[in-house]
Image (cartoon, rainbow, N blue to C red; front, side, top):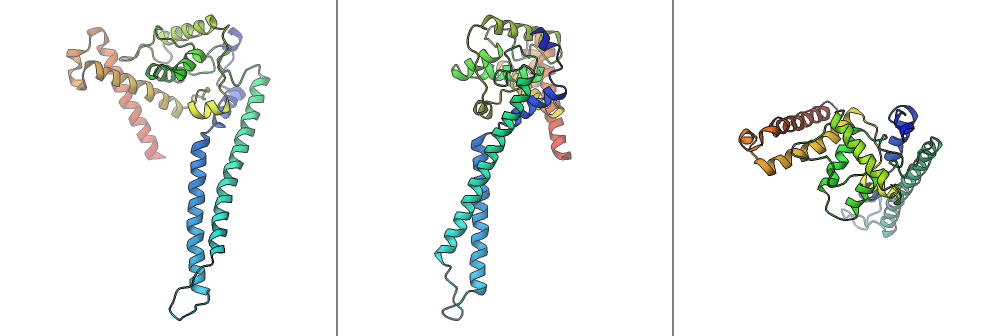
Length: 276
């Protein structure tokens, strides 16, 4: 584990490999829906074109009367649309699985397990992503998903993490202690089988490490700061102006910090969307 910690997990080939592996696992159901929409749009466009063609150039039985379009033309456009949608989806699925296999080989070549990124610790994950995942664990209902998060990342109900206000922020001593705590819990349960993050699992739950680009950091930070502010409002009231009366004195500064940081992140993401 110490050897892995000394490796710059997000730099160079290794960071690109983890990012590429995660990017290869887009949701197949959403992709299928997208290709079905493309097929439907193609069917509508080609059907309209066929109707116009027959009305402009087809033979009329009576002057001024419309031209009946042969049923075979409709079946042909329907078949073409289905072929484009189905073929496009299968091509995407093939390329996605091929990309997943290629990036998996790169990671295995570095001695890592692409299906178990936390086997040797949490160094592949940025502080922001770990906090976002721990927030998801905090909000998850008891069940398989919550147990999966606990087993993969070492989270547990009695660790030092808390919302409303946040007990740790990226790059702080408190965050470092949380990492040690979670990795220690992983070591304590090392005798138990570690759940795999397969292609299908990642496409549904997004658990693989992401390269911490500026946008990625903002999105992760928005998730945990927003949840922290929601918890603060639930506990101490929705009027932030009254927090100086309702929030305990030792938590007031941190509560205001979370609220202002959530607003700053939302503004930064909004300005990126406008400029983009």
